[in-house]
Image 1 (tube, helix red, strand yellow):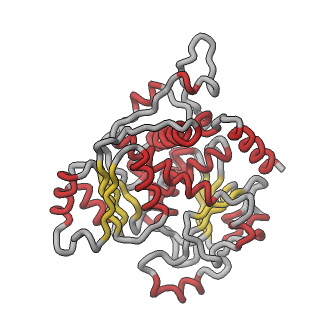
Image 2 (cartoon, rainbow, N blue to C red; image 1 turned 90 degrees about the vertical axis):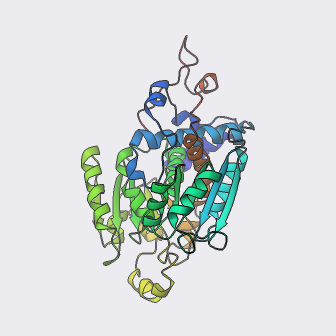
Image 3 (spheres, rainbow, N blue to C red; image 1 turned 180 degrees about the vertical axis):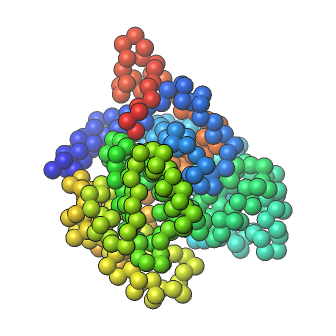
Length: 371
């Protein structure tokens, strides 16, 4: 009942031109002065504080409101170019990056392994230096995190991780924006991961506790998250007073969870393991049986592409599924991320007054600490 009431209220507010995203992502000048993201690489979310990640989300929400709701044209990146290196095929990452960068007036340059000699006929060091001289930033979707790290070390421009074997940080930004839009706050939510201990899970583990979110993980034996990442996640949970649990029981991980999350069981490059993995992941499909033990206001996330064995149609296409709003938010979070990499901050001011009125001080915008 609460879920449907919230959905009705949110939809009604959006029809009337109000924007719950901006309301929930208010930002003040002190935070803008404190957060310095210009020119920094985004290789993993472990290198960013909770406040810095929140700021990226604020920028994303601001752009979504101004462009989608108000119809503003913001050519902030006119004259800028973005190199897009894709060793792996993609739908959402490519579309969101190309359309988002173009919406801001920039020029995205898409390069596959057929177009570029990434570590094959040319060293990564040489490629990094050439890219640095011809583009203003690079988003790289690669097989190995080590290649991304070397690219960032040798380049003199910002490098963004578009996906690697260890992390997928830009996906998690979209997830968090989607959850913020729906729940109004991330703090106190319990995330229930059911599936492979992969790059998506690693990025959640590197960031959830920084927002005050609890994390319950279920993976089959032999498919647990990287032990070094688990160790860091345990430390983050301890520092932030949140809970982190790991189990091999999907229902145990789903118990009381606000957000049920899964992903592909067979990532690109693991096709030869398909038969073995399908057998190992038996019982890990997210169904309404899984949802019955979750919180009353449960929702579902999947980064796509989805296979039926991972989640059944009843859950995937239900009103509780936030999968497609999450996919759209890939564009807005990519735009917010790139915007801050080029040093364009959030313009606080009168346009926020309908969400944050303060008598005698209409230009003020206050950091909402219940994020």
